[in-house]
Image: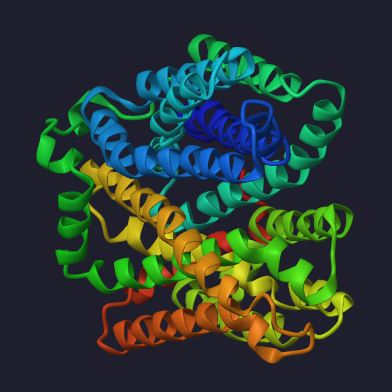
Length: 425
């Protein structure tokens, strides 16, 4: 018989992550235009949109470990519900904002409460056995992809009617999700497994340092950081690169992002159990990183737009990398510190979201005026390939040191993921 906490908890976590990602997707095509309604020039519009993006990322970086540590002390449920309500308030404030300063405050609130992804991952760890956590994180990655499919498309349609409408819709979705969690979802962390709260654990830098010093996790922190930096650089420069190289507009980019979301959802939600059964979690992480190296190189060298679509589908193993690495980290972490551990990983995501646009767009600006056929226009993707290559080398060296999970656990993981065992859920 399944644990009742798992029956109620996992669907709630997946819905929560989907709604969070849906809200971000709703805002993606509309927020820059809405900022333009408050500015007198394109330069000012760019400055303010950049300020909103950076403030969101900075708040996520500092608050992800804080929410994780609070959830280790007080339980996952109250922190999750409070965060979801705060995220809804953030969208509502943007919808009614009379000025950019109010919008900036709203984005800071959104960054703080949007850091609840770490708590969601910790909840999934609580209600999932160690050998099945990579699959659970894969499901979370899948709903990320599903939100990425639906959000920008829906946001564009609603924004065509009224620029505030996507944010009103996102606020409504968030508040409905909070009500569902409040009335139907149980706590996942028993009182005897809760850990005392300390500011040291809530400090994102000390949390990262503590994670890096963990004998079995340290090298994986660097692997995950390099992977995320490359991934975020791709996200931040994709539209500019395709415009410079292929002359793509919103339609072509919308279709390409739709394809990315489809592949991410398929890998995380359907194929990951089979991939785990075939490769094992450690080898899957290595193959995912290797797939990323070649995908980035091919993106940068592509001379025709159709090639990008082929690479998206051919590089599907890349989308299994993050859940595989998280699964390894979670299994070797202290069960009483899953919130801090997942919060630290999400702090890496936030830090990458701040650093990646600064590095990627700066590099792309230097090559953007070159002829379309010049290979140097792909410089950002070549840098991403280099980062992935270093990550692969670090991960491979870690496995060579014998820090892998025990054979018994690896076999259990493979057995749990085998098609005969059914889909995760």
